[in-house]
Length: 107
Image 1 (tube, rainbow, N blue to C red):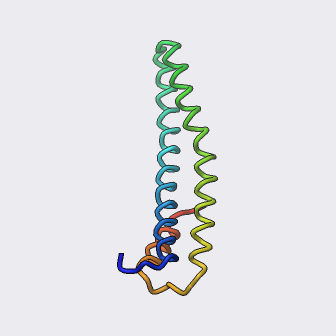
Image 2: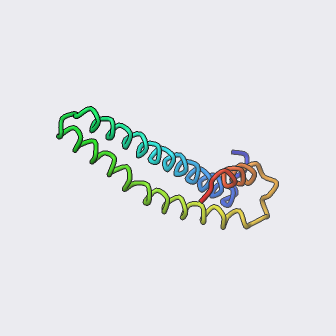
């Protein structure tokens, strides 16, 4: 942390938030796909109806988290974009790292 500039600190924070939320979104989406596959497998194998019901609840919970996480990611990306519009720190490593993270996230 060579520089204590508040703008650079905010860039580090906001880029970290975007990175974390993007990873969280990917995890929830994978959880939904995996859960649906497991639920279908349980139905095909005629597993206990209670287990099937509980697995259905787990899948529904994961599905409910996807839109919320997308909304939070969109908000975080907007915040990061507004900081990246300030070109005064273009040469800093924090700006470059934030720009790289922003380029990786598609919303």
